[in-house]
Length: 594
Image (tube, helix red, strand yellow):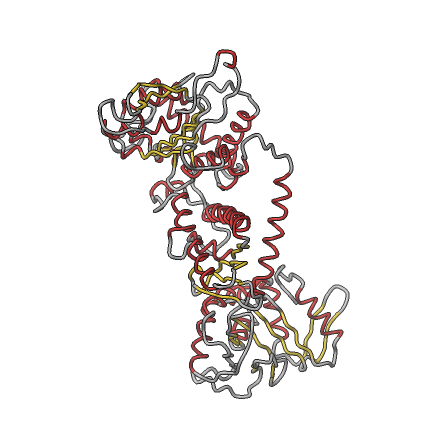
């Protein structure tokens, strides 16, 4: 019986099989038992294991047979990741009456062992074996203290599962104790076939996404599917998507820049969404399509020259504005109402740290109706003051302002029964009122003014201000998996390498808790405990910077396969660390490294 789907009727199914095999020697093997319903496992162990008579009743029939010729075995993958790399071939053999460190098991009631050929020997009534560890069994039965130590490690790994089974059992039964005393630890390194179901499932998902992606795609417009790679900020993502689609349809005149003010809790995807806008519009996050400016580092007149180029007569040639807008010329009068092509994406990070004269002059001019930027163009013989229109460009201002108020409002608006969208828009409306009408400061403590202290900024930013709310661990993990999927597409198209990963890999890489139901952090906790890295930085580290990053694991897999070619890379967890299993051209050879 394979319990990957939960086996909610396991007892009925086992009973039916035993009734059909009355009087015959039988092995009842439950694969992926850790995924079965704990109550079903508790009933199977509590009522059938080590029993002379197996009884069970359904609505239509009753079971009452002699089950002394039946061996019950539960197979799990618990602990396989920390066991991979141990010396293969050991099988821990225990019994209810013998658990000494030397492993000398007596032939007591219920003892069971298995050897390298898969044979199982049971002594006494209805013997049972509960298997933990790797996917394959090879070698010999070990009677050393090593196997006892491994068994203790596996008991610790499986403690949550055993506790769930114990909690589901009646007080008169002790299934967890019976399972602990029947544990056998199987060692060995899983081959590529161990991941075959994972590979098949992810390939099927990719096939469906590819088919869906081909339907209704406007090749002349932006690829807004890129925006879906940020999970958990759907309200902002949907607004950005609507604006991009309106631009592509020619809904605006193309005379004005598009402005977004993203604010709120750190590490929630503000800069990452800015990059996704550039990816959607231009298919690139490199200049001249995208530039990010850290405003806390641009304070002096000399530092401001990075936008405009140094004054005439001062050494230095190019400024960012020339690189971004130099090719955009004012439209001819006859085409004044024709849509302009999308312009560059400029990100002004932590805009509250910008110089006030920049906020009230240069930035206001850029985002105004028929806005423009001024800069210097230097050639070998000339230096001229020039201005270019900003129509069609995207100005994204990010900020950590207003977090205290945002935490307070979000907590108040998170009313039971409200949908996440209702909570978001109620929070946004109240924050707009506080920001623009009450004119709250950037921080309740400190001397940093609101980015909207000047009336000109308030006038131009109304309707363009979007809060970013806290992300749950699962939402962050989903964002990372979507980034992995993009890398999988790249590897497949460029290198003909298939990339796959386990959920455990993504969870460990993002530092998410093992509980898949982990919810959102409270607004107060999110405001008071800023994450060490932004979503963008965290993904960058996981993809290429960390010693166990995807790119490092990929390079190590290629090296392991050399001189053969690596055709598949499986990212998984080994010894509680990210690891990669490379599958080489020789179908019978795999290379594993951690």
